[in-house]
Amino acid sequence: MNSKQLQYAVALAKVRNFSQAAQEFKISQPAFSKQIIALESELGVKLFDRNTMPLSLTSAGEFFIQKAKRLLFEEDNLIKTIEKYKIGEHGKLTIGIAPFRSLYVMPKVVATLKEKFPCLKIVLEEHGLADLQKGLLEGLYDFAIMNLPVDEAEFEVIPMEEDSIVLAVPNNLLRFVNIDKFGENTKEVDLTECKDLPFVVLGEAQELRKLFDRLCAKAQIEPNIFVEVTGVTTAREMVREGIAAALLPKQFLQREAENADITIFEVKQNEYVRQPAIVLRRGQYVSKYAEFTIQLLKEE
Image (cartoon, rainbow, N blue to C red; front, side, top):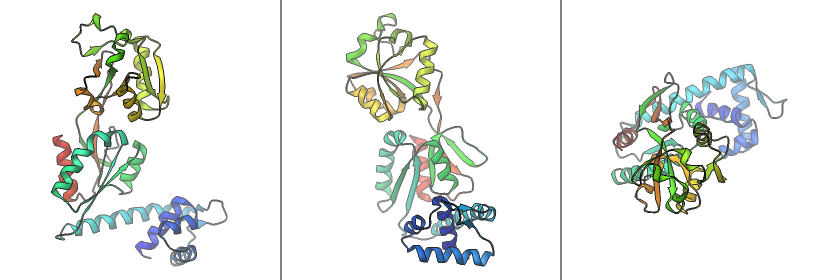
């Protein structure tokens, strides 16, 4: 039994198809199948039930795959630790992060990293929370940036600056906000004074939409939903174009804070704060590149 066979078995357990798993390693299906058969023969048990469609894991297979993932993680950790002692080796840094947060957090960080480590390969894996946690557990990232809470028995957590929610209003739509009640220089608005304001919102299953609905219910208004979109970036662009207002993460609107055509308001009803953090799997090797990047993020 060798690590390549472990990798093959883990890949097959994931996709449940010999052809698809073989393609992942760029080898023929017969060669791939031969390795799985050899592994099962050495172990003396069947790992995969080939009579199901797609194929499934046997009880022994489920146990084996769980342990195989752990062994591969430890092997990868060992290799990365040994590489620490090499000089002049080209490095790689893989960071898991949500797409919208990557947009406003990573450009400056990547620029600084490339200036200090010109040969460093940087990979940003952009996923949702569930996939980020899964990727961390599987050792796919050096670290991830995600919202708390997470299981701190599994992960080490380094909190970042809190990210609150604000209301971004195109100035051409300010007539729909009763600012006079609060004064022209106010940076806080009550949603009760925004009942006629056209909004761009996310889909009903998304976190920001659920927050929007809760705040509107708290303000006892029926919001004027002008358009519904899938992505936070699209919502922001709608605001930039003067089409509608939106509730968005404050840090996501850093550039808009300087935009003469958009006004940013704190929301009186808002009690919600996002707590992003740098998250690592406990016991994971931290490369010098990851250490440097984490320090950069802490100073942001």
